[in-house]
Structure formats: C-alpha cells, structure tokens
Image (cartoon, rainbow, N blue to C red; front, side, top):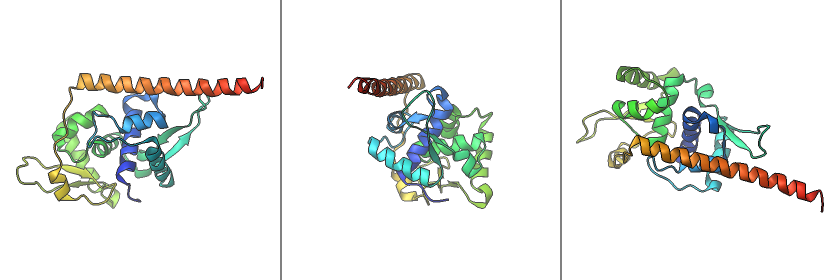
Length: 217
C-alpha cells in the first residue's frame, strides 16, 4: 500500500472515528472533517490544519482509493467517506486499533484498551493484544509494529506503519498525550460536531436561496 503522509493519516483516522462514534454526522463535510482533525481531545499531536490542507489530503486519499466523495440527496454540500476496512481487509477490532494509533500515535495495550475501546467493544486486554499480534503480521504485510522498550518505559508500545517505518528516537522524545476527562471531552466533541452540522445546513440553505433569487433577476 502507498504510504500516507501525516495529515493523510490524521484525515483518514478522523473519518473512521466519526463513522464509529457519531454515525449521525457521517459522512463528513470538509468543514466538519477539518474540525475533527484539529480536535484537542483524542488527538496527538494537536494540529491546526486549514480546510485547504485537509482538502489536499483528501485528494491524496482518493488517489490511494481510501476515501471518496459522497453526494447525498438531502444536501448539496459534498461529503466524504472512507473505505479503510475494505481496502486493507480489516475486521472491526483491527479497524479500531489502527484508527486509535493514527489519531494518537504509539500506545501501550493498556492505553489502546481505553482509546480504541471508544470505537469497538473489546472484551479484555487479551483481545487487544491478540488483535495487535494479528496486525503485526497482517496478510504478510505488517500494519502495526511492536516498538523496542525505551529506557524509563515499563510497557511495550505499538505504532502503525501506514506512514512508513517508525523512528524510535522520535517516538521516545514525544511527550505523553494529555488526558482529558472523558465526560467533558466527549461533550466538547459533540458540541463541535453539532456546530459543524449547523454550519453545513446554513451553507446549504444559502445556496438554495441564491438559486431562488436568481429566478427573479
């Protein structure tokens, strides 16, 4: 598979996450997807991508056949969907793990149980570890790598390989993602998504009004 840039991985991960956590807002408009990429919770590192940057990343994902434009009958604003599981032949558990790694960087199995657990209901830590093992030898092409334990680290960490080989030194220097209380972070995320949906409806109504006005000009 063609390697993803960092922003392509963030965009793809955001599409997967929103499909699983807030299906009522999926597929996503460019505005909603940009908001999702730049969330302050469940993201590491936190970014500030522009809509133009996200649009360019989407073009890259479309060229790699991992995303496509969806034109619904109820909206004139183009929306975007992903086909990650279909292209890479992932089951629900594997999709959740890969998504969490794309959005938050390298993690321990314990961290993944919490972060990927929002996306798929894992029965135990053993299921997380079993899924990680499957991904390290996935169809003869590893999608996840087990990182060497670094000085001062108690647990082994895992990282995705969709953006190429992982630089161990860079991973070791990365600060631990800041934890946010789940209740407050989920509430903020929900508000951001509702705001993006309202903006989308407003833009759609604005387009309809412009067409209506043109009839009388």
